[in-house]
Length: 353
Image (cartoon, rainbow, N blue to C red):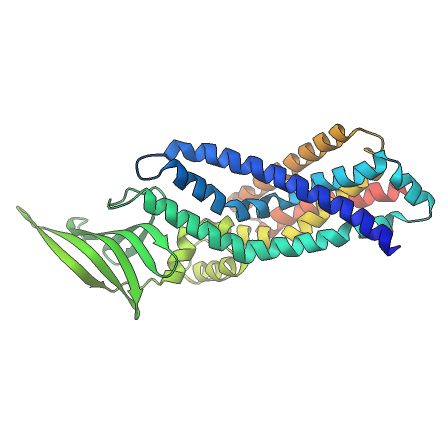
């Protein structure tokens, strides 16, 4: 029986890995084509290719549920097309046993997915985003569309790029008085965090008076601001690229500051419940093979998997923003499609016997 479990599990596992490779490759290709719109003298085609490759772990993590759905339909469907599932059922093997044989390799994939999403993908995404922002903002103030704004008192700060290790690229500061008049501006090529403060380097400052202005140059300058590299690394990243631990901490930080953290809670529950979502899609795929897709061709199974996967993704993408607009819990927006898929899968499997 163990040999039979391994045979079923390996067939499904190989199919899922193959499908994951194909759809991830397509996602990387489309992402690279999209990056070509931003190519210039500083951000070259090789920089775009490097950026896209660094985002591959995140795309693998995002594509895992759909790959599990389509791969299970392909792998288990191939056994059904060759009448192997019929022979297995005739030998007295229950559907529950077959489902468990399919779920075993999925547990391994789900564990690997959690590790990639928590450790590898955030790290590579941070490097990719920092390198792209750096290439698009070399020596320029506020040239990066991927930068961030921060305010402390009457000082407004723009940072072009945040690099791992507590290094900022392209720091622009504006000081405005209570009457909203600009008093001074400065631009630093970079800033390094050390001993609780930032050390600015290659600083150009402009002081504005009523009828004149003066420009000052400094090789370095101390900058005291209440923001740490860890917080900057979190703020500069999109919520869906952050690890679960980072989302948890930053969501609580925003809540303590009285700010809206719904986007981060939504991303948190998407990542936490991804194994449940993957298991629900696999269960539905197994039920399709034993039910409505028992005697169809491989192409029909792939087409069905793609359609169901896209419908599921669209439902999640609609419910997620809806939870932010209408104020219901983000966990409901994430869990509801998965519960519907799991319920449909259980119902079809019960009908199949």
